[in-house]
Length: 119
Ligand SMILES: [Zn+2]
Image (cartoon, rainbow, N blue to C red; front, side, top):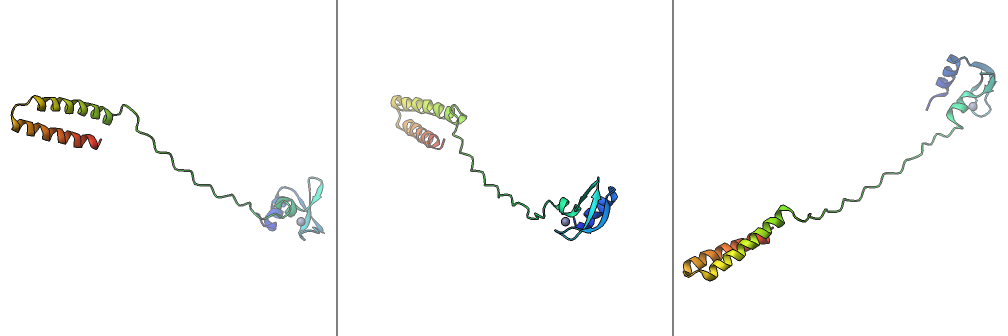
């Protein structure tokens, strides 16, 4: 927002001529500019509206939806492989003659199931 003094100084520099009459609205001296008599202050200040329109605060963007895990990812491929391995181990347990080996294989299966659960 320019001050009336600055506006008038601008019009003087641009070739305006200050008149002895005063603006009835704001009391500033009228100017003769480009053949017209006008109040440069009122013209420049656009009718005296000084209120700047307050821009509404931008609304916060909604959070992005969680992306679902795409199918065929490494985890599911690993799970399928674990499934096959567990089936294979179970088959070996069935055919295993020695109890100690059965226990060892059962522990392997249990560990595999545990890992499978966390995939
Ligand atoms: Zn005026």
